[in-house]
Image (cartoon, rainbow, N blue to C red; front, side, top):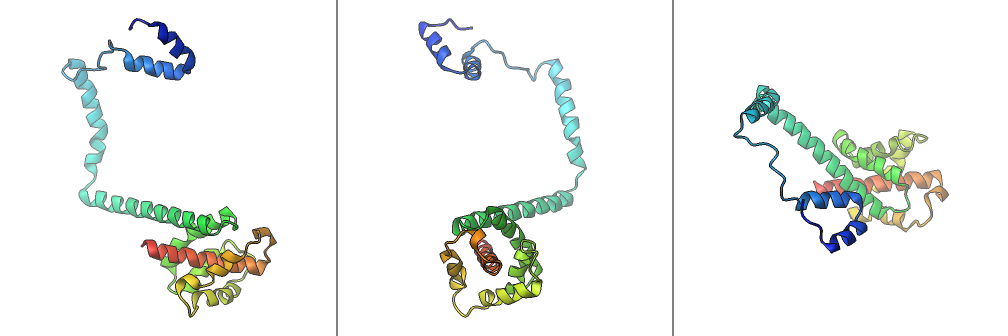
Length: 193
């Protein structure tokens, strides 16, 4: 190992043990390469590694294409869900985070499952508001879904202007807020697509 200078004691006292070990490993000059591929012992090691990966040779190109397509679709769904969830957290700070997360997770399925916007909104909040009947939520969702104004002014601003904490809202107000959050999440999903 290298000779120690008077300054090395100063550095040794100032750095934690793990950092000192890492530093010693980096500056050590007499460390040999762990194995040499030209040596005979290396051949058996490399052969064993190749046999472990031989399993992948049994997949056909169509199997790989199909499975990778499923994987990428799942990754895209997770990415979209997290992007929508982040947008909801920024826009609706007073709504409980678990409520927003559940809406963000259900938006993708609701948009695939239902054609009408009101049905999509109700599907997003149905599990979160179990005390409400689906028909009652449909009545509350209609004004938000079928507003005659622009999509951005579909009641979301009214919800944002409600500055009261979630616990102080009545059940009807909570349902309206939930539906407005679902409406906003659906619009964000459409924008990101």
